[in-house]
Length: 299
Image 1: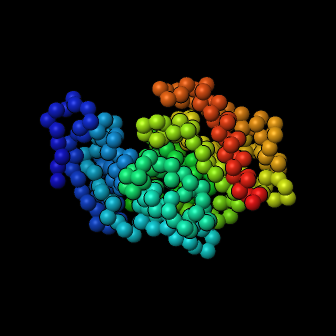
Image 2: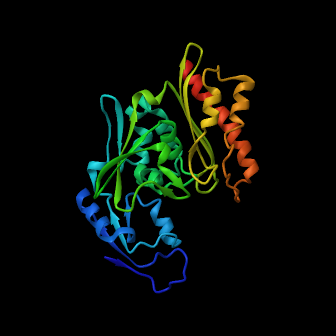
Image 3: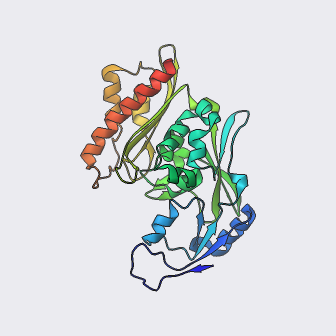
């Protein structure tokens, strides 16, 4: 099937491409191997299609993997919670298993776009797209997730900390497909929260903060904070984390630490918020998110 437009200069009309439905993972990988950087994977379409309409992505071949039901699952293993690459945002937000074991992933998924987007969009598409204002990247960073990809050269696991490379750029190679997201149950902590300031129209994060923490003996025994919407890519607020370890997560110590959420970051400035305003929002929402996670951890 070929799609074309005779009006090459028109916005919102993709350039010519061939559309192929993959019937198996092997077939999808063969197509990627054959066409290389000229091919793009389509899962839910809510990341790729807008880029194609604005011609920010101009693949000559679109490989639809949306029918690969083997990649659409959420399951529990002995040490891990495993989410298939084609699990939709709706599956994440409504999963009883995730709500119990990995709640921050459900919390973030519930804040994605609207009902239509959550019914079609997938975790794999969102993560590989690597939008700096997407919700799920903050959650996988806070969960210390490992992201499994498969390609012609075999499979590999990429730590979430090394997955987001730059603006709309992930560590997934052109011939690879994201198949799983794995989270150790122990990394989910015993308190979690996700808070964000959404853009009014799109719902993307002006600032989004995901926190997982462990609480023991009246202090913070472990904490991870994922940030989206602030910089050129999603990132961990490592300096804030280190300052909050072994503290009671309150008072001036908490405010002072959270004020460093955007420290050393090339902060975005756009029609939704100036860089200075984003820094202030990041500090405020990190504090609120940590407080919410701590309240849940304390019970």
